[in-house]
Length: 306
Image 1 (tube, one colour):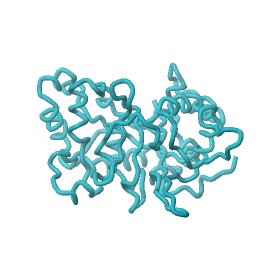
Image 2: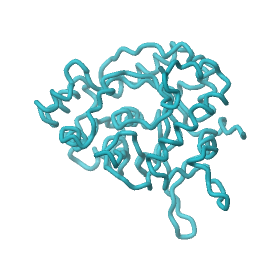
Image 3: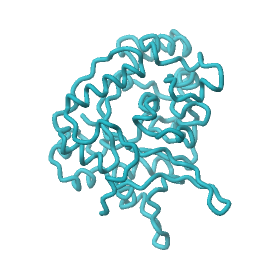
Image 4: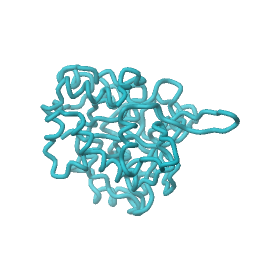
């Protein structure tokens, strides 16, 4: 397989052979700026060695800590029902002075400004309140993840047509070696195309790639994650995870000027058939969400490091 790792765009600063202490310090500084408060970050798992970091970096992944958004002792489904979605959201965000309440951003300029971190819009918690979206209990847990750092797809115009594509990465090529993503015999593979794939098929493809991905990496540390079901290691981000990591636009997903040009799927379900999609224009690409059961949406993979 061609090694494309050296040409990847703007991967996170903490991915190229840094020490575990460096990673923790980098994440503390980043989240302190985003959330406006200091958070406690545990060290990454022991197997996250410089060798593992370098290999993940070449595949197109950066290593990040996702802090808990909820306090699981008080931010429960019962408290949401008692308080209502508006008050519940405000109480959650009171702990994070710099993480704005979406409803408090009135002007279009503020909504579109990616330098203003903000929580998911009120529709999200209203949908959870109504039961359209499951209560995100896992948002009460901090976790280390490796997430694809390629930019969101950019819209191009060529010969009068408009299309969207992602940059080419080694992991993108692995996707197209699975039965789900592989093109028909008469079609050329488009490594950078992640559209027109049903969400459930994406989930199946990520499960299929998981075992081979770790085997190909030839690293016992990654193959020994200790999870009961290794196929669950690679998945889509949840809506709260995307919201938090997406707040770190210049560090996580996008170079300047490519902040809100496309939407991406999350693993968060809607009424059992749709998916929460994040990345709308005019809302900095990480806080606004819509629901789709269509396939014309991109995605990025995440590896849960336990």
